[in-house]
Length: 74
Image: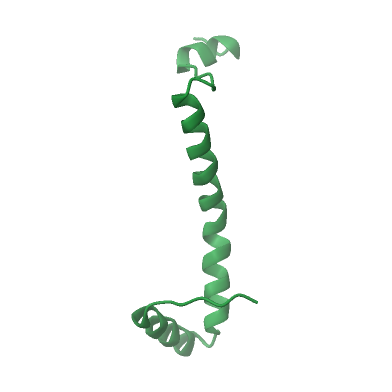
């Protein structure tokens, strides 16, 4: 069980959507979280990699080098 505070306008929008569709506000909140959780995790991981690159701890390759390594050159 999780409790959250949302702006009144968002709550009203959820109420209206739930009434129009016959679904619950909880259903829509759960769907929104499930839909965006992967993206949020990806962003967090990308930010970590970017910081390692900036510190020189992570190697980077340009597209030509990647194609050569994978034997994908034209």
